[in-house]
Figure (cartoon, rainbow, N blue to C red):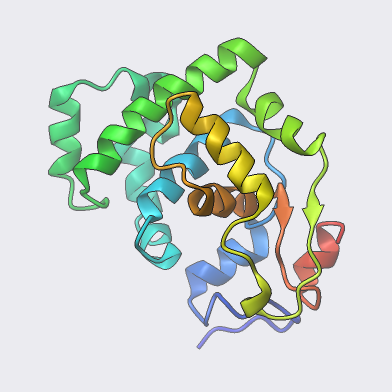
Length: 192
């Protein structure tokens, strides 16, 4: 079993890909719209599943969803949806696949209105990371007032699969929220 010699969160559970994701990506503040779109899509596909399942299919998702280019995904037609439904490398949930196309269109509207999705989303925290001081995994919330607020706004703007729990997951992944445990080396690296 692969382990990190530094004090770390224990949720990667010895899975090498999960450890790499934890150590290099999860919780790092994102300011790139394409990366934001990737997290929105992947966390929607995670609904009802484990992040490990999605992470192990991530490279297949990248290829299947044109590197998470929202302009490309917004143009998907019924033929492309059916192609995705037949792609065994991804999670083949028709509602989630169709929601990716809907979300791409809504994402583009936010870019048009705010200049970028990044400007829109970071405005909810005045551009600041929310650092929680958590000592064990049981303290990590599934949702917060912040995720409730953003979820409601995204739903109002036409997004699908953006309930508060899913939104909270992508806020954590994209570093708007630092939920690394306070004893984890990444918590300090990320300014906690």
